[in-house]
Length: 311
Image 1: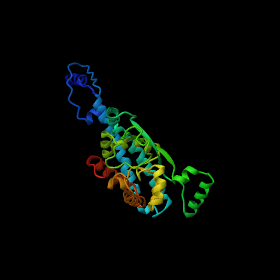
Image 2: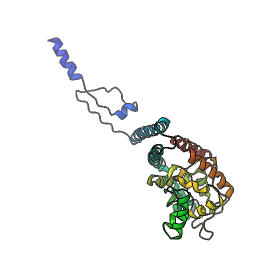
Image 3: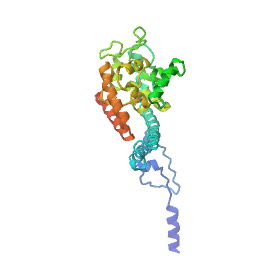
Image 4: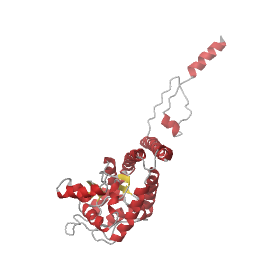
């Protein structure tokens, strides 16, 4: 009888406490002392705990996608050296990387989107953002005969815009770094090292590459990629295609937010600098892979914090 009473008392003294999984992962679980038979625990997560939990879980998924992409692309036995399956898989994985990377970039740079517009308004009059027409990828597969036919099509006013510029055009988005209407009188010209059109804040934004952050939206829309040759304006594309050998090859792939030429060189300010960057762009095009894209992105982070490669 005594043993039965003891078991009943023991059962009445036992309580089940449910603790959120997030609390356990943060080391917030602790021993709970009950002063009565009824225990009620209600302690909601703080805002910072919710943000921390979201980012930790989000980047687990992001890392999984990246590692999976690298692993699949790194298996050469499954694909021929120049096989269409390999190219299709690379393009598919690259698009996944672009989507995940651009969304991650937009989330991580939220403080920049809040602070930089205010600073731009305080620094000089004019809009916060500006957009320019740039030339993107030429999605048409071409050989020499197709190029000749394209010239005929151009003369006949068929698909004139694409054939003139070599690729599809789109509007790139950037934080404004120059005075308002900087090219109203001069027209499209290269920015020089001590260009008077560049604002004080604009010089910092260009050096740190912060002015490029809005282009995550272009990447998300599929107009650009995270890694690739930088998109250029139509006037410059038409001019440089005639002056720089191999310049049209840059249009074989999507333009990028960053690229091998950007981490190894700076802004274009002369024909010689363009020649150097085209060599890097062609090197990237001929050796492109998911692994190379990831290495370039890590180098870009170094450029942003050290200023190397950004003139």
